[in-house]
Amino acid sequence: MEQIDLKSYTYQQMEKLTAEMGLPRFRAGQIFGWLHEKRVSDFDEMTNLPAALRSQLAEKFYINAIRVKKRLVSSIDGTVKYLYELRDGNCVESVLMHYHHGNTLCISSQVGCRMGCRFCASTIGGRVRDLTASEMLDEVYMAQADSGERVDGVVMMGIGEPLDNFDNVMAFLEILSDPRGLNLGLRHVSLSTCGLVDRIYALAERRLQLTLSVSLHAPNDAIRSRSMPVNARYNVDTLLRACRDYFAATGRRISFEYALIAGENDAPEHAAELAARLRGMGAHVNLIPVNPVAETGYRRGDRAAIERFQNELRLRGVNATIRRELGADISAACGQLRRQDADASTSGRVPVTEGGRQL
Ligand code: SAH
Image (tube, rainbow, N blue to C red; front, side):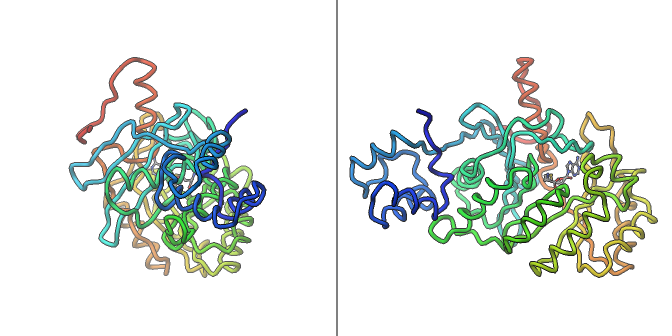
């Protein structure tokens, strides 16, 4: 019989399970606490459960664990990049960043991605599978255990499209923010999407306190369609309407990501067009100098072009910041380490990383 992943159970599901097993209600709290507060890796560590119950659980369930396969530490800013190996041998990445307001962990939500954005390294091999809630939780738990530091905020901007793995991501968020577990408030969580409109509406219904980030990357359909296949399904108008509706329903302002690609979407007229489309949304635009990925051929513009773009937006009343780059020496941009590792495994080479220390 295939074992079941107990660490992916929300508190409610745990209560249902213990009820079905005929156990007193407090057992749900005990088991949940062992998994998500004390974060044990073996049922035998659950010392306040009767031995018979522990072995009963161990027969039917497993406790997910992931392993740090590689850890790179930036010598510039201390950013830590983890390559994690999952139970089935697949790998994903997380990045631990230090800001003055605390530590933020960028996590992956899928092994690979099927959205096909042309500038993105994570999508090159397509999607292998979704991550379970427990695997996403373990990205956070493991980063804390390994670094000895508290993760204060989580951004879902690593490998994968979180809204393409909707149910597991919702369970992950519920467990992550549960006061009986890590208790990380959703105000400290950002979820980034390439723009799956039907799922944005589904998310709005949940009324979560998280920040929704939308990867726009273009002011119009002509440009967006060139780099983002999802635009054929949900065009810019449809996406922005969903964003306005999301804001109206939740009261949470949306943050837009805009990767500046030289000669593609970074001209002043693009900024003007973008500002016109975002008017009245209270939106924030996060400008990202595009990370060159060998396979894509995209280049970033110079600093002056990036600042000019920001100024054009600000002049038109749109709040815009330029993302500070962290971990530049350890290829911290998403998807790159997993790809290097896969290349190395198939060719027998040792992965090469420039600069950063490999521990
Ligand atoms: N699938 C989600 C989240 C993962 S990517 C999404 O699309 O939003 C996190 C952010 O990094 C997205 O805005 C994505 O478009 C951006 N990104 C991907 N590759 C990039 C690159 N080479 N340079 C700059 N930003 C990139």
